[in-house]
Image (cartoon, rainbow, N blue to C red; front, top):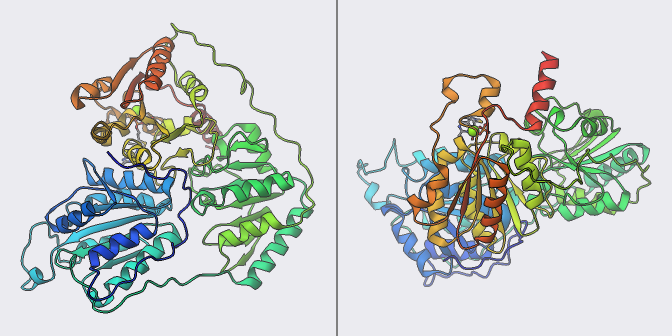
Length: 567
Ligand SMILES: Cc1ncc(C[n+]2csc(CCOP(=O)(O)OP(=O)(O)O)c2C)c(N)n1
Ligand SMILES: [Mg+2]
């Protein structure tokens, strides 16, 4: 069983004070890597072993890092990503090429959505590469896998030379924490036990903002906000990754500025705060919210990457001239660009400004937002009623993990109570994220309950990771929206290619020898199943919720209407 990891660590800590000082006699490349991972607060790692990484696995086993074996490497990547989104940093350890290359898609997603996952891969030993042999798992040459990972990580290294290996470990881990993106570290199997040839002390280079640029940007922000009549904050996912969510709320509440979030950033601010408006996503959000945001004469966009999904497939109408736009990569006010400003300095600077903000009347809540869900037990369950019921179920002990598909659009309207309680691949949108990510979430936050929302298509891709839930006694509640195929795609262009086999999803427990399964056709059955799932804390629960193929979320309906008006 995994040990209890500290939950609630929202953002990766800054490089922890190194406890590690190596000298020639005492430390090896493998053990140094493990110690540095621990310096950064990592307590758990996901993966699958193989002969090129067995020595390192042995070392992990002897350390206090907890190893969680998964069923597939891509799933291990999603689990490490889910873990990193809660814990602040995650790691996955795999074998050469057959393991590593299968991990690429999940690491690409972590790169796109800024989740710092450390990828550790074994590799053939340096000695055994001498006469260029055709060793198993080799693709082209011995560098192929590292070169592939160069494209999808923010730093990569192969620890081939003991003279540079120790510094390379420091460099990569520092980059993961600084840029909140994955890094790749490859260890040839005959280097795991190689000792440090010289005393090595890890060094970290602090990075600072350009103080002149920061001062000017904040002064301009102050002028623009003070001159505006209808300011609105749009908080994005970077506020979570950089641990700035509390600062945003402080800034909003000190100045009474209404705030909304992007879909990828959903739950960065607690959705129960009085100034919270909802998820802004162009034509996919309700009309009143869309108009309220687009009417603003001062959009304060903090840590939001404006992706096509976040912008309602580019139906959004946000005027850059009326925007203050700050991310880890850019700071822009109207059309003025500022360089070398760290996002934490800008956001904390905003929170300290003395502003005179015109108070804007709040948007009325959507009709029926506070009405109680009244069960109609004999009615056939529909998408809208399913989400209305789930909304009533959520509390602070739960973390919602939504996969790609209509469940993601429906989930936008759920009310998330605390921050970081909603996780989804809302930008990279790779199907199959949610079930394995819930394993990482369970490990990172053992006292919280994952609620997994997943389409039947996405479920079929990675459902075998429920096997890991059974092994470790994890208890996600998995709600399969069984609309008999790829509904989101049907909505774009229908054809037989969107049909899939209708599985008995509720019978997964028979196959896995653990868990609770429920088949749901009506509201009454849904109610009973959810009540039982909540009560069954000892294992996972799975609900096979039968929906009509054309029963889509209000968000997708709104998008369809808006797009049809434009065509
Ligand atoms: C790995 C991957 N393959 C293909 C796609 C393209 N795609 C986007 S949505 C979708 C259908 C999703 O089906 P399902 O999980 O059943 O959800 P639904 O749309 O039915 O709600 C597909 C195939 C994708 N996003 N990710
Ligand atoms: Mg489906």
